[in-house]
Amino acid sequence: MAKRDLSKQLESLTFRCPACGNTFDAAPGRVEDEPSLEHHPFAYFADCTRCGEEAAQAPFHKSLVKAWANATGPKTPAGKAASARNLEGHPTAEEALRTRFNALKHGMTAETAQYFPARPGKYPACSSCDVDPGYCAKQPACIKQTQLFMVHHAAFEQRNPKHLTPIYSSIQASITAIIQQILQTIIADGVKLEAPAWAVTREGEIVIGEYEDLETGQTRRIMEVKAHPLLKPLQEFLSRNNLALSDMGMTPKAIEQEEQGMGRLAPAGDGQKTLSLEDYAAKQAESMAALRALADRANARKQRDPVLIEYQQQNGGEQ
Image 1 (spheres, rainbow, N blue to C red):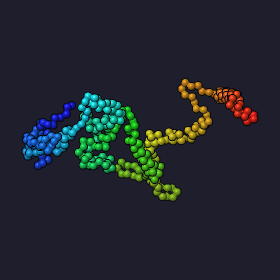
Image 2: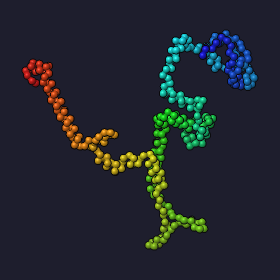
Image 3: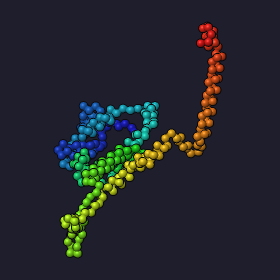
Image 4: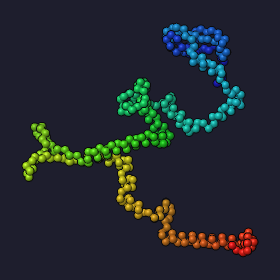
């Protein structure tokens, strides 16, 4: 794109009204010469679209015009080609990931976690959330849920589950904490719970089950014994998270099989033949025989070494 010609007046600018604070884009209604501005010697004014007062060019737009004037870059074809070569090898994989993440959040095809509208204080996680409630209320969706949505979206698009590791590690830690709380509750209450047996009569009265002890003559209450209701959820948590003894190889049977397997050769892989104990011993014997022959040849070469022979002659024979 050609560089802007700032020696001529601009046809459209951004103005800011000092009276009402309105910022608007419009064609200038009045233009004055401003020789002190060397980069663009003009001062622009226009009537505010809200209150009608005359407004001057917005300060940030003045700075933008000055940046246009001071902008540098390659001017020759060779310089432009060299500048274009700076883009070779980009974007990298990391840059592409960052670009996709920003597109999910800010781009034209940005997606929003539609099922979690911003409702400060309405979700369980709001009590510990670090997002300002006033800022959250102005958003279309919950900030934390939107981040969770985007990370999952990017992980599945790129087929890279490593992006989800921090999330699921936190979930696993929370599940472990719940299991510990269940265990502590069961230990405190006991594995069994007793409650009086009762029934409802036809008249709608509740009757507690009682009987008279024939030996002592005392009235005793019939008690129903049930397993602790948290035992079943605890078993489900342990089995679904592979925390049972069998999953960790800690059952007596698994330990016994492991001990029996110690000292044995590992089974061969696919397409490989296994060796019997006799074949393995024969192979070891052949290896030892080959090693002895190799040692004999090495000793023979040593005896024929001219340097060694000369050394022995100078020192009066073999050492």
